[in-house]
Image (cartoon, one colour):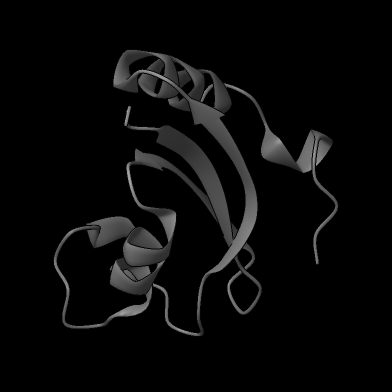
Length: 84
């Protein structure tokens, strides 16, 4: 069975913030973003109120997921997503 990799965008409606990342396990990673005791993401830890999954894409290789993550980080996401 081949692994899948994901690029994801999460949203914090309390602080009106987006975060872009990539992972092999979206559910696990989202729990880490919402866990105040987890040090995996210093950026999301600064903003309480809960992060929700807004968008994800699947790739067969991590390098492709990283490439897409880097692209998302260069564009203003407000142009592509309506704030919830």
